[in-house]
Length: 455
Ligand SMILES: Nc1ncnc2c1ncn2[C@@H]1O[C@H](COP(=O)(O)OP(=O)(O)OP(=O)(O)O)[C@@H](O)[C@H]1O
Ligand SMILES: [Mg+2]
Image 1 (cartoon, rainbow, N blue to C red):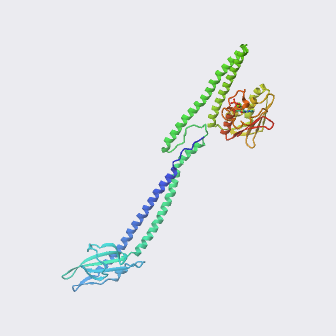
Image 2: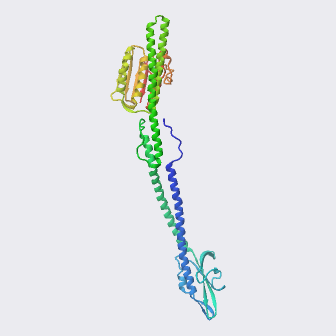
Image 3: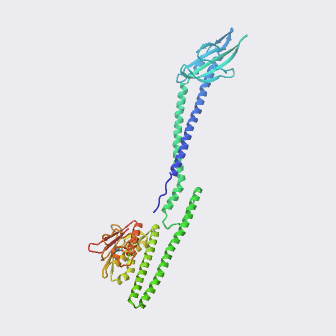
């Protein structure tokens, strides 16, 4: 059984979200940078025209007969014309004395012959850009300081800025969409080798514990090295377990067989009936132990192999036929007939050693629990799914116990006096489960047990 490890988020999602988050921050930065830069340039353009217009007014000023004379040229205002019909205000001051225009426009300090002072302010409830320029006029005997204040509303500029903002936003959306696509692509490319490694582990057969040899990115080398070393250790320990099972079977069965042959020999030599009975009990106990050891080891082997199922395509007729040939002498000793009826070409995918072991246990039961001079029928068919059905003419399963007999060490009432360990049906059921199939126990209408092992 494979246990799914606890999941802590997804690498792909984390990577995509980080990249998209980064792209979103960059997009916002890009939007504000483009907009600020464009605002500065547009503002600079308006300032230049305002400055030129104010300078034109200053240029038209002169001192005539001790009086300052300003003849505002038409071009000074015409150059300020905008598509949004922005309003223009002006004021002219001689030193600190108001001469003409809007008196509420006050000149800014700091303007000189060298340059004007620019400022954004509110005038008559409207936002305006304002410039103050100054010039020193020199007459016959006087010096006069002339200040010109020129203000213009910013409707055209706002419209230009709105347009720029819309374009910058479109640019941002385009950049962001491209970044999202690139993030998804970059993530798939990065995660790709990890996914390929996982696929190649999943595709492997249970017996394939060879190391991964395909090249992997350097960051994955520690992971693959650890996996390779784990599989190396697993391979070694699996080999050891198989050897251990074989060795243990040998070690337990061989001395028991020796003890049994000594007991048999002793039985030949003993004359007194009570001693003969004692030796017979001894032989029976040895048979019980031997059977139990044998079944326990088979069960251990089956548990081990079921976890590492070695699936092959098996012809069920051939496999069971071999078994029937091997068991026929045993059946004949009990005057029992083994009848095999197999449909041709019934195949299933599974471990032949496990399936043979399961069927052997079922035939073994039929031979053990049926009366002599009866027959055991073994039927192999493909429909509804590949199955082996073994029926006998014995007493059948005790009806009230039938549901529990496949449990470990469970033996029925009818098994009293018969050697057995209660593991045969457990083994058969474990094999069926490992192959995704099932074991069904039932009694025939005319008497006798019927066991079906299906795959
Ligand atoms: N063909 C059969 N006819 C009647 N009873 C059966 C048959 N097969 C099994 N049983 C009953 O089911 C019980 C469990 O069978 P199972 O094969 O698991 O154990 P066992 O035969 O007693 O011991 P062993 O592990 O040596 O096979 C048996 O003890 C017997 O009571
Ligand atoms: Mg049995």
